[in-house]
Image (cartoon, rainbow, N blue to C red; front, side):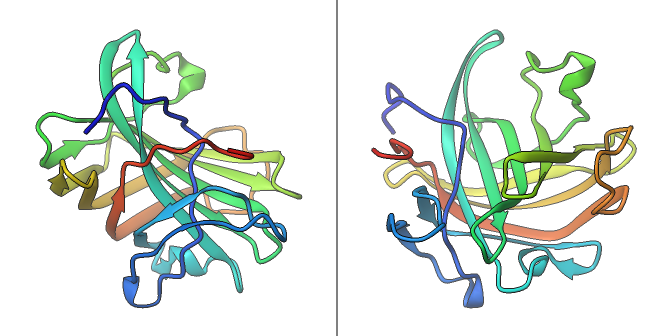
Length: 207
């Protein structure tokens, strides 16, 4: 894998999860759908309900990207999945950060890391769920892992030739207090999480 590429943290895909079919596409400029890369799938039950069906007629986007850190020094990759409403507005963004490249496979513990508590420079693997409201540009609640639960991401395979990653995850996330919107419950339990996607280089909007 080429590690000198420019990478962006804002992530996305258009993907219908029926049968977990892998799709590879750049979204057309027509309509409200963002122009973002698309490859693979991410599925999970959130509080017993399929997370991808949280919004009626909604769609989901998912992929990985490389991240470079000066403090702490290192090369990591991120995994993001975004739920959009049927109108094309961001609703929930699930972001894993600082997934280590080495070893390429294995189970990695996800730690509690609230950036409001000053942990943004930590090299620990962390996850955040951001909620967005209105037309996607109004911030809602943020959810972070709680250390009292068994939170992990399991990398089952990594293909250096194609940059494909496949794995599983389990999370219990709690809302940052005070709450902003109360649209979602205080605690979000992600179970039976699975994903198969790629680490993608892309140019973003207009690229």
